[in-house]
Length: 260
Image 1 (cartoon, rainbow, N blue to C red):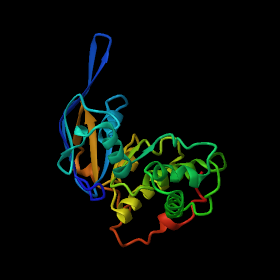
Image 2: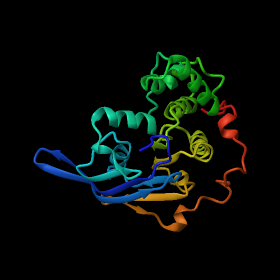
Image 3: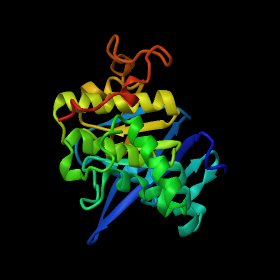
Image 4: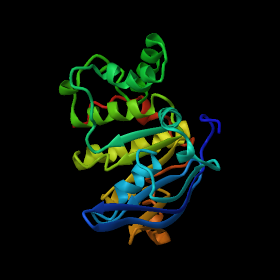
């Protein structure tokens, strides 16, 4: 498949079983799911029901015990380790609850790492990292190290790093869990803006139901499967998500100095 084209992801009877001693723990059970190109999906559910396991398999970080995960019709787990790693680097971006920035590196050095790892020359990687940091409102923080940035700014650096390869699929696991409410909302709005401007497919695992309600599609994990939430739950609050083109790219170009 062309790793730069929009991706349609399909889970076909995906199960994931973990073994603990003689016990088998079935976390995902014959899951079937389709995520269309450009979708914005939130995944909610109680702790320990398998949301992160689902996200790791979707991101090709973990393999299913059985079943298939198809990207544009291709079972990506049929690839060998190196080809799968190249696919992941080019196609999928990750944002986690903890930003996992390298403390001795500047913001721009952290962001350029995926591009350097992909084999891009250093000058090109740095240009791409600078452009992405400017896009998330951190053009004035390029040389700041993580310890010199607020929590919201650190998470914006992590988002820029996840987007530096212009992935077609962006996965976020509790990305606002360590942030205050106002900063968390601004980060969530940034995700939605990236979807509108970059066209990236977005899947967010979150416990924050208010933030989840702002996504056009909301899934709930119950019993090892994902089900669509009630349509009334899926609708974003009035005025929270204007159609594409109605807003200038303010969240992608404005300063994030209000992040705490």
